[in-house]
Image (cartoon, rainbow, N blue to C red; front, side, top):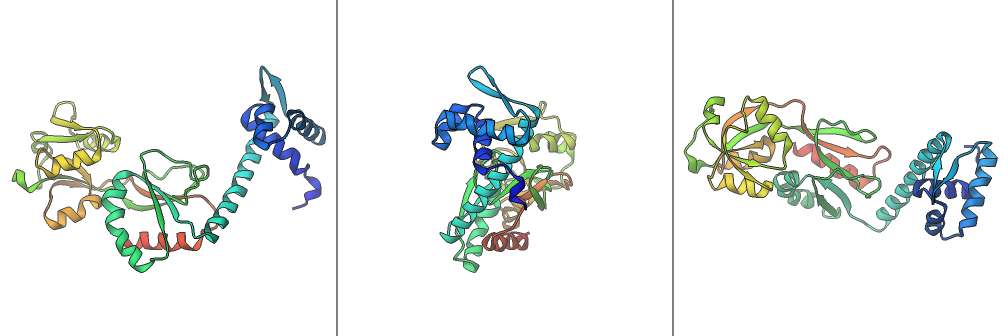
Length: 288
């Protein structure tokens, strides 16, 4: 890199803050300098580049096409610097791995296995954040995310952990034995989890009309799972999540199919992988 060809770092930093906050005043507050200093740095940058980058608009600023392109590149670059520094500090301070995942994955797959991981690696702390939200790994400082979907998340490196093979399950209390046909399934009372769109897509592909089956809706996955366990009705489950209960006889399989599109994916930011994360990834793969 030839630093002599680049404008001063101070002017790049001032412009990035002004562009991101859409105002000189907010940028000045963020960088703890005066409003005039931000304006001077931005004008100096425009002069060095020979291009207008921003113009005043109301109480804020609007970016030119060139300004928007430069702003996006600078923000990404500064975020990468921030991330690298944070990872180095976290590594030095023994900070935990921060992992975002869906509540279903945490409850039914990861948590039951964590004890085995910590027996092997007691020196690697993990901070779990179960959430349905798609977190921004860079902005929110997560090392890893386990997401449900088709693996298409631009800007992230993704790796399928396992496919989402679905199984229709029931409590042994109901006295049902599989496999059941779609017609027989449609005659049962169903437990439907409201906030699980993948479930609706799967049942529809099996030829089940959710609007016409007898059903009880549950607002959370824990309530839906408890209702199925109690024998109130049958429900859909991702096979990998229900396998322990199926093997132990706490649930019985009524209908199973393979879903090739959807699955649980390991998602991480591109770039070097810290050693404790590398160890955790190896262990995740070994558990599948």
